[in-house]
Length: 370
Image 1 (tube, rainbow, N blue to C red):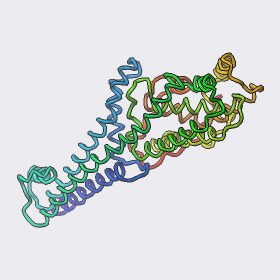
Image 2 (image 1 turned 30 degrees about the horizontal axis):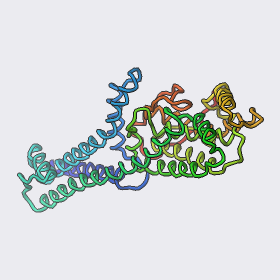
Image 3 (image 1 turned 90 degrees about the horizontal axis):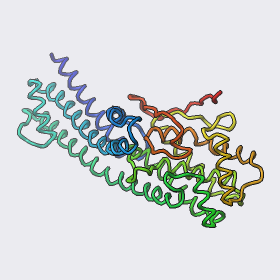
Image 4 (image 1 turned 45 degrees about the vertical axis):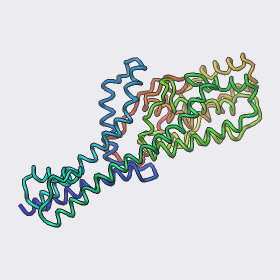
C-alpha cells in the first residue's frame, strides 16, 4: 500500500508539472513550441467540429460553425488544465494522507477553486493545498492576460486583410491586384505597399506560431481570410516581378520571400510537410500554364504592359510561385478558407496534425507529379 501511495504521489506531481508546462508553452513562452496537451485538445475538438462543418455543407454554414472553433478551444483548454491539476492533486492528497479517494478529490477541489470548505489534516498537506490554490489562480490569470495579446494580434492581421478588398476584390486575386495598380496608375509606385505587406508577413509568422490559436480565428467577413489575402499578395508580387513590364521592384521580391518564409514556419509548427528548397520545374506548381496564359491575356487586354517574352515570364512566375505553392494550398485547406483564385480553389484536402507529435514539423521533399 505504501508503494502504491508513493506511485500516486509521483504520478500526481507529473500530471501537475506537465499541465503547468503546457500552460507556460502555450501562453507565456514567446516562440512556437508545441505543447502536447494543447495539441490534443485542439485536434480532438476540430474532429468534433468537422462532424458539423462537413465539406459538403454550404460555406456560410461551415464558416459560422468554424468561427467558434478557436474561442471554444481556448475555453476548453482552460477546463482541461484545471481538470488535470485537480486530478494530479487528488492523487497527491490520497498518497500523502491515505484518505478515501473521494475525500482526496473533495480536498483537491476545495483547494483549487479556493472554496475552503475542506482542508487537509497535517502541515505538509496544507502546504500542498496552498500550492494548488496558487496553481489555479495562475492558470486563470495566464489565460485572461493571454486573450488581449491574441485579439491585439488579430486586429493587426485583419486591418490589412480588410483593406486588401479595395485593391484585390473579394475573394482576393493577384490578377485583380495587378489590374488595380494599373488602373490607378501605380505600377511604378508600389514600394510602400510591398513594405507594408512584408511587415504583415513578419508579424503573422511571429503571432501565428507564438499564439497558434490565432491561425483558426476567422475574419469578421465570411469571404475574407488571412491565408487567401496572403495568396493574393504573393501572386500579385510574383506577377509584377515576372510578367509586368515595369522596372524591377526589390521590395516586391522581399515581400514574396517574407511571405513564403512565414507560411513555411507556420507549417513547421503544425508538422505539415512541404518541399525543401523547391525549384521549378523539378517541383511543379498548382497554377497551370493555361491559367497563367488566361491571366496574361486578361491583363494585356486591360492595357497592362506585359513583358515581350511570355515563355520567360511563365518560367519566372513559376520560379517564384514554387516557393509558396505547397504551403499556401495546405494552409488554405487546413483553416477551411473561403474559395479564392489560385489559393483555395485547388481541391486540396486538409491534413490533420499528428495528435501526439511535439516539436517542429520536419519538411520533406515531395516527388514532382508525373
